[in-house]
Length: 301
Image 1 (cartoon, rainbow, N blue to C red):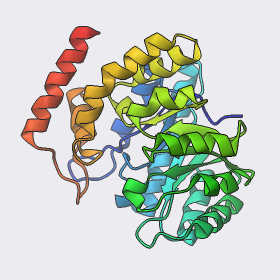
Image 2: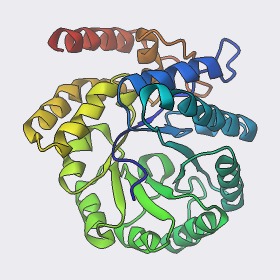
Image 3: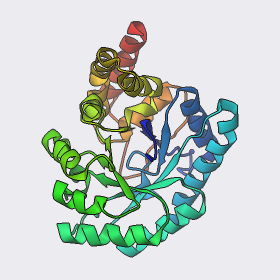
């Protein structure tokens, strides 16, 4: 059974004026996603600035997501799976955080591949095997070589897919040929989620289960509709919505994620605060471009 099908948001972590985690705004963001039909919350991913969080903060953020989802699931009459993000270049610490996120009620976990010290493809199998054996939750592997400096090859992904509780991959390699080979090697029992917002429809067309999205932070209903229309057989509608979002996607990734997304959320009325250093505010020119793109989308809505 899939962890989720459709649109999962790699949700931002809001900070207050002292640059501390703001649980009240986080709860408001989660309610916003319930209202706009997001299918899953991925807490403490790249967009959630997980690399700047202390272990206590990391656990608190995921715990807040779990508690907020429970609060609103009765009101909206649906469950919102919470995927706790993690990963790092120390396998023992990854196992430790996995256990803690399981204890606070995460439905699943997502681990990015080791960065900086990296490892070999053999090392990746050993790394993920150790993590998987330390928890009872289903795990999504996160492949994003542009961030980590190491690509998880399709052959390695095939080996990882044989581990019982490693059930999916967030594929952000940007290489469609590689993603196709993952489908070929891993088969129907292993879920693939697009990790790039401009690849949602292409990945769905190969049999993908959905997307783990950055742009869903600010356009959750549209991202949900891209996946829902596709699964309902309305391929032209899904394709049209994907193309409609491409200019905004390009703007959001014209500077380092999540700097533009956090600014965009302020345009939506959410006081998410600034990113933690070394991430900084975006340039005024990008702020103006984002405002104009929002106006264009609103006009065409």
